[in-house]
Length: 353
Image 1 (tube, helix red, strand yellow):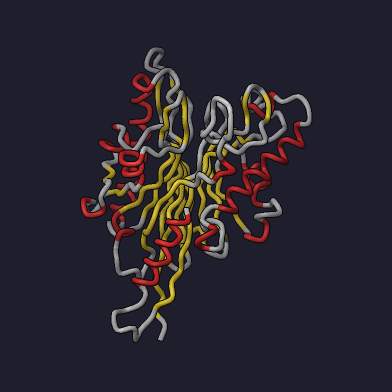
Image 2: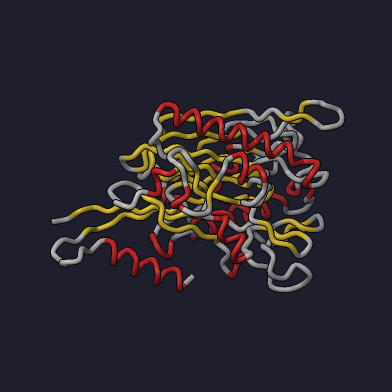
């Protein structure tokens, strides 16, 4: 992390001072992030939802106290992401594995985040486990223009019955004075095996691509960020062949998609979640080509990362090195999530005379 900080500071000083040293530019920098909040359910049994099997509802003693601690833990992570560089929490953060708007309201009203003045975007979705996606944004930095939810229709391979899963959330707004689109995803899990469940994630990728294509048909230069827990790695068919995400900026086509997490996964073996001693990089943030322009007069992509700070890591036992999850063996661990968050930095030059 320190190496990243020094590199970023040097880079910013370099690009914002011209060769003659006569004209300098100030700059703005924001963090955009995504975080799987791992079964963030409230303590109330909702008769309209299948929430009684959630880890929170399975806890019989001190449930309210545990819920409060879980909220505090989630708020702490959100507060910290990107703060060492931007001196602020994320301007925008997509989330998944939430039960409802109430849990998001509890997070943004936590004492750590209250002064950030976050607002939320959330729709109740049809997922069988009653988990949804959402978006948090700082009202002073982002203004919502429109929001919509888009249903993914998938079917069981054997019974051919419709399976309800998470919708994809599309939010359009202005990051300060520039319009961008954010799509928040939580694609179908690998339950039943990767190969058997693969068509479901391919269907999710096709819906995601359809949303991106629709936005680009209106304005081919529009800026789109798609993020989420994809339950697929950057090299899997859904990302590689359906979204056609590229690992190199120079290879991104006019209406193409750039995925900075491909290189992390292929070259460094980094991941956001682990299972049976194998790391997966299911959590990703991708963007369209206009974010790759290098004049820095508008919001421009600079750097991506995995927020895997020491306090988020299991220190001992058979899961040493894994994300320190919050629920295990029917109880609360005082941990955070079984996923690490991911983030990108957006930068913009501001000329001064």
